[in-house]
Image (cartoon, rainbow, N blue to C red; front, top):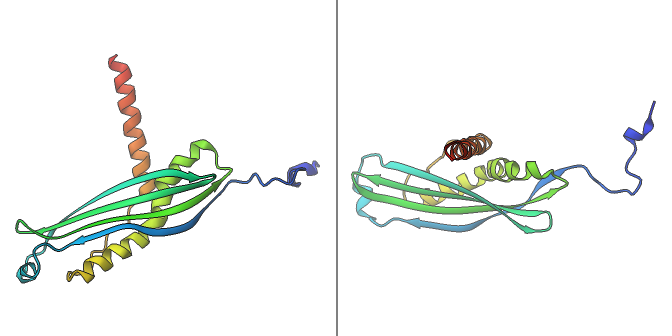
Length: 163
């Protein structure tokens, strides 16, 4: 029986992959209620358009910032009820993570961890603006990342096929 498999490295280095959320914060928040108070007289439910954008950047050695941007526009019968722009971010520490796993983590798992907190900030802002809280449904960011990668791969393949 070879005992070397269970022994730590002789030099004492920790080579196990590790990823963790260091901190999270509101980077930017804007709430517009351009037609108050008249908009409160309208009883029709607003049509709500929600857009997401996710970004990631390395900000230090083994530290990455993941930014989740949520834009919401609500209109009732052609009149803007409210507009919310939220940029919510988190700092993630990644150590010994293989390069091929960094982007999937930052653009899939990172936003998944940040989303519940961003959702609460958004709901509170809408509620504080005089409207019922906007509770966004959970989103599978990892699946969205995989779909985008697959679409990008098909586009690249298509481009090569047409050359």
